[in-house]
Image: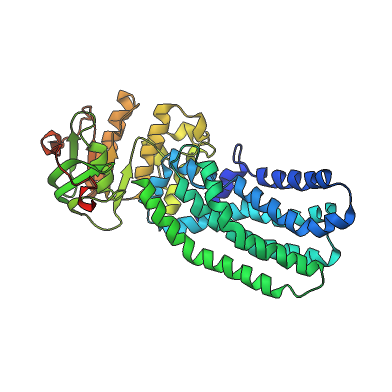
Length: 218
Length: 204
């Protein structure tokens, strides 16, 4: 399992791996918003939690279709399926590798971008925590979507359509936690619910992902 | 070691082979013959467990099967050694000594997978079989894009190292690999066209 994780991380940082693409996309989207809505600090700081969360959702989406597509094309997915590594474990590792290369950099970069959107100072901690808890769910749900569309030509668009609705609960609770933090209210409820979604998706979706992969490999 | 009884397998829901039965003793190989499209790949994928059989039974020791197809599963951004090391790690074993020499890859050890020629990629794909330490190999045209010398090297490895250690191999190929192994022509097992097993009629 560690071998698979290390291989995926190594592939991501090598040439053509796409590491940093999601992060750059996140940066650009967040920078574009003030140009679009104008330099009103009050308005920006009100919409900042939502913008940051929506942007990180889209950035995470960007690299999802690579999770299984490359392994499927070069045949290593079939070889992995016949290896001693359980496919459920491989699915979870793939999600983890996606999170480390996408979700974690997004989380770490978000506070700096919050500054650009004049996010309320009280909200920074909750922004970091909510992204830290929430982005793993984005990776796991996305991995499931990637398994559904593996082997399809131009599956990327279909993947976005399948996965984005599933991201809604995470988005609602994530942005809500940051907003409550900014307003000085107690964000624990939203954070707990989001942690629940993450735990639930890591508990259930590896099995669904493995089942879908087995069908797609036939 | 490998026993197949009355196996029926399908491609895209349409049965292609029916009632295939054979057995391969430990230390022996079996060569599958048949024209293109007769179902050699389908049979091998079914044997390897990548797709379910419609009927019949396949028995071999659990966790001993390995499949090698036209696609070698080589990562273009990893070096030859890294590619092999990955499969060794996944299968929980060390990289066997001399494996690079056996498959004539020693000079290429630090080259990236993406810079290899078709034949070199194939050799790397086959070297994976020497790394994973599995006893029952299902090989789908292993010699495609190999030159005569490399074919000889591969069949020597198969004979001297894999089979003589009690392994088993089922090989679909169109060429003479120089292996002393029985051949099985799949043409007689071709499923009749009117078999309705793959249609939805039963549900309607």
